[in-house]
Image 1 (cartoon, rainbow, N blue to C red):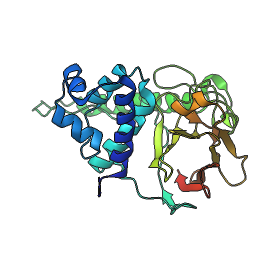
Image 2: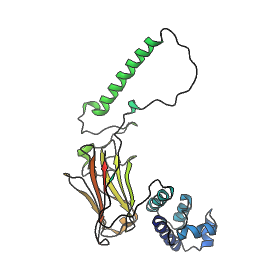
Image 3: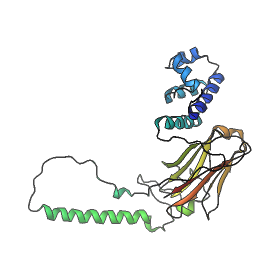
Image 4: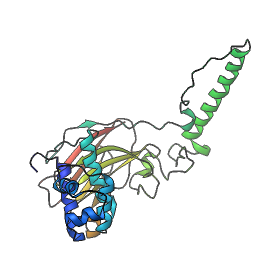
Length: 285
C-alpha cells in the first residue's frame, strides 16, 4: 500500500478488522453484499474508496455500530474529493489556520427565491404600490430582527429560537461548560475543523451559530487520551477517555461560548500514546 492515502489505509484496517470479526472470506463477503470480490480486494487493501453502502453492509454483517466507521469513511471521502484534504500534522502544533463561521441570519432576512423571467405590464399606480410594499417589508424585517436579537423581551444572553421554532438552551458565554446535546447546540452545527491526527484519531471542532458556541470531538481514540478546547482568557474545556466503551463512540468537550468575533481557538489531543500534544489553531468569526 505504498503511496496510499493515510485516510484510506486507516479505513481499510478497520474494514479488515470487521471482516475478521464476521468470519467472512472475500468470496462470502461478496456473496452477502452487492459488491464483487475484486472490489472488496481494493477496499480492504486501501487502494480504493468503498461506497458508503458497502461499508454499511460490512458493519451490519459484523454487528458494528456505524457512527465511528462513518466518521472514518467521511475523512477518506473528503480526502479523495479534495474538499477536506488532510495535511500531516506535526506532533506538537499544526500551523494556524483561519476558518470563518458565518453569523446567524434571521429567517426574515432570507433572500427571495429564484426569479422567473417574463414580461409584465407597467401601470401608472405601480410606483406607489411598490413604495407601500417596500415600507411594509422593511417594517417586518426590522421587527423580526429585533425579536431574534432579544426574543420575548429577553436579554441578549438568553436562549435563542431557531428559524424552525425550537429554542436553544444557551447563548454565548452562558453556554460555557455545558453539554451541546442537552442545550440543542448540537442540532445542525457547522464543522470548522476536520482532521486526522498522527495517532489515527479523527478530530473536529464544531460551531452552532444560534448558540454562538463551539466544542471539539474525537473518535477512534485510545485509553488515556485527553481532548481540550481553549480560548485565551476563558476556561479550557476538556474531556478524557477513561472507559473502554468510549473507544467506539464520539467523545466531545463541553461547550465554549464565543464572546466576540475573530475568536482564536486551540484544539489539542494528548495522551499516554502521544509523545506530545497534537494541536490545531483556528479562528472563528
